[in-house]
Length: 444
Image (cartoon, rainbow, N blue to C red):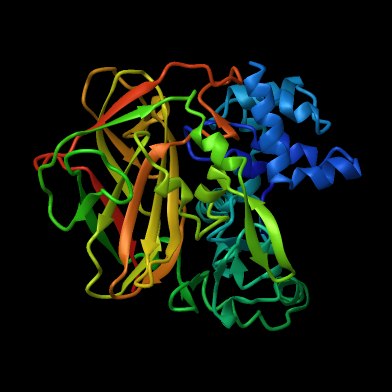
């Protein structure tokens, strides 16, 4: 048995509390059976233009999808109104007894820059927990440095980010060899040296571990400290090795702020193996890892986010696993959406995507229980829904943390499909006695 990429089950594994997103209507536009709809599905600029026009006309965001042949039906309404995992999605996920009945070895293939990577890891975790002993020990999870398409064909680049020759894997041949191994008892593919096999960017080599969890051998905590005055990428706060007091920092998250929409409507020239082409910036694709060298949505932060940098690393740091972030915040509203980006800033000055997380504050998880925010009260946010990362940062590199509004052309603050909602004011608290911290997973 083999799975790779996005399946209906993946939808149930999205992190709790994602913003309301138009990604599903857009995905459906490629499946309606019309050539024009399929081609326009990949046109970022066309979609951004249609969405901006309907929002300017005070129409719900999903009406933009109607131009691409996607009607607003009962199923789509359910998705937009209940983006979180729960009863509305339970019918899409295999039951525990169905997973437990899988009696053949499984090969799961995914990518560290794949926007569906949450689903890949979620399904693998369920399989490990539920599968019988006869299937689980002979199964493998293979995670390359790839994006969604790359996890199907094994390319050695994502956007403008290039990897070493070892990243190029003939995934189709790997699948064939896997099936021949399982069905005809031929040798197992050489790359599958342990149950979890993953590519480490920076080292440009494959590594293996007995499990996803065992690939992480330690933690590197960094403590957040803000600086007085306006914060942006050039006047940032610090990621410190020890907790420190610092001024609280206010954020204004306004759904009516059109700056991100304007950025997403501005084309840029991108070089590809086929030659130059026009591309569009997309905040949701940046957080998904699909545009891993893009710094625009950090460099443009001005009031709707906060940025922190570490000092240069004194030794190489292998970041293997999922980061986590603890914030102490005071909000004047019950709900808002936050987007968190973690980048490495290389000694050359280039930025490279490491991980990201999305959180809807009303869906925050406290000891396994969803608890909404209490306006005016200082509360702790533990954000653990980060994407898997496998990269070695060299000596002299810095870490960059961006906490900002999650709203963009493709994500909205509410299921009503409109952006006309009041601004939310957040205060990030920086205090030595109860520090906010970014914890990085460290590999061997």
